[in-house]
Image: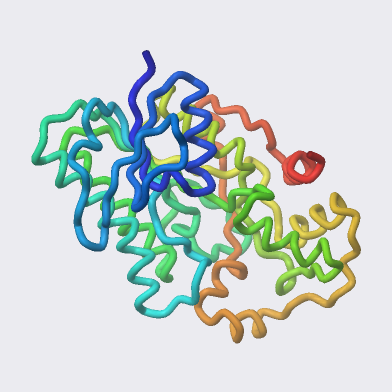
Length: 301
């Protein structure tokens, strides 16, 4: 009998596919969600992070928690209120779970949490590793408090694994879908000079890495990125070639992006070249190590 895993954010893009993979591998999966579930094979327990309410039964029989919950970073404009929501949706949620664990007997041994490569911020052409310092900007500091909140589980005797996730590539949503849509209609373009590094990973490799982290009992921090970072230009050109569409529009200058997106422009303008060496040294083998292989698989289906 496989372990029983409780997932927060289980209905999101990564969570939904990870749930299917875990079920396929013989694990029992439950979700903590704001609404009742859509997967008949998964029991859904309700919580409301803002109100501080959680169904105490969610931890019954659970061996491991995967924490993916969090408001989308690029979904809405970064007002002060939205920035607070982005942070609290990640930190208050895990605090709610830890408070529950303090009050009730349980058998949970480990927490596997998402984090993000936004931790490192704009690093130009420098290759960053898990030991590199955090950025002082909003995304960097968001990741710091997020990881710190997750680390509080160590005081409860839990093992902690944090996966700093790059841009997850899939045609189902996220950054690639937004990039590919104008390309498909002949309006694709490179952002700024296109030299900024994009830390990316194919969705399949992302969910496989969660499974690997669970089965190989990894702890600490690992970068969830492919071993071959790509620039914005390379990503855009590769997608255009695969979709057989021209890129004829001029590059979008940085000032225009800053004008349109304000502080949120950091999401597309920051250059973050992230190393996957530690992940590979742990024995993980990527199915899609290059941007060409990843884009081909996504759009050749």
